[in-house]
Length: 211
Image 1 (cartoon, rainbow, N blue to C red):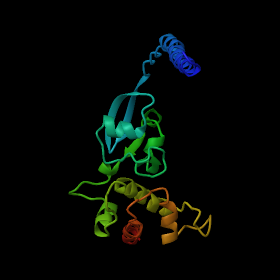
Image 2: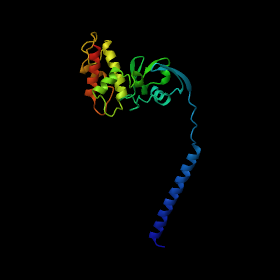
Image 3: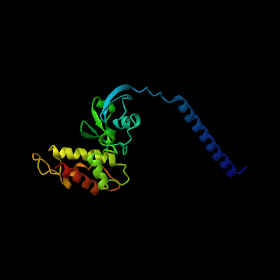
Image 4: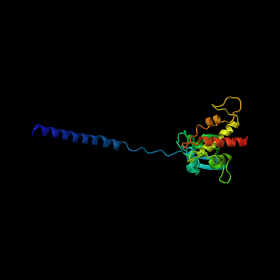
């Protein structure tokens, strides 16, 4: 046997030994670290007034208001977009104030009045904002539309109530319904189709009708 054969055998022996060592070191770890059992969820009875109806649910306390509406009450008009409060697709009205329903827990709204897109109007009796969105083609794919409409309704109420925004010229005088005001207040609702100008036209139409 020459020296090249000895080197080949040595190299082969090192590879076999390394593989065996890796097996010995990993298998016991897998055996020693079994999956920890998950604790049972904490359940709680939650009473909500949703679209004018009293609804009672028993929910995992970690359930978001969005998931309670979609998965437990089958009100799927409210959309789950980014699920991080950055797109506005999940916007609903709680006691008349718009919120991102993906960022709040259902148990935080016991007794609150929740209004979703289904509660604003019906196909046979549309809310003025819904009718204006149709008239001005304020949607394209339609995914963000429920959140856009809920937010648009709240925005006009905010302006009419005299609540200022960053775009307001004065903190004491009642804001005017302008493109700048509406754009600023609607900035949390993203339309990936880019129907913003049509949405503003729909809002202006409703605001003019209310004046």
